[in-house]
Image (cartoon, rainbow, N blue to C red):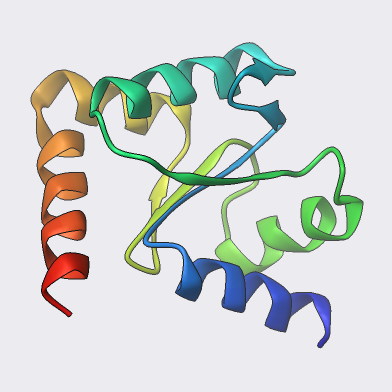
Length: 109
């Protein structure tokens, strides 16, 4: 499996996936910390990939997603965006709605 296939598999297998610097309990950058806090406020579990431990993903994901920075939030196989988009969506209630719809759809399957 090459790195692009690995990224595609991770995105497909995890309905809510955050590519971030560090881990949720110890983020390595402020933007990743804010993204984790926003997701945590939505009350559902999410998967994460620490890009600092995976330099191949850190290098290839921005090209694959056409999004240059981290964190990157993916929901249902679609790139949602980075920290500022995540925070805007949290404030508007859109993030929680999107996550709840994802969880609801996943439980039905």
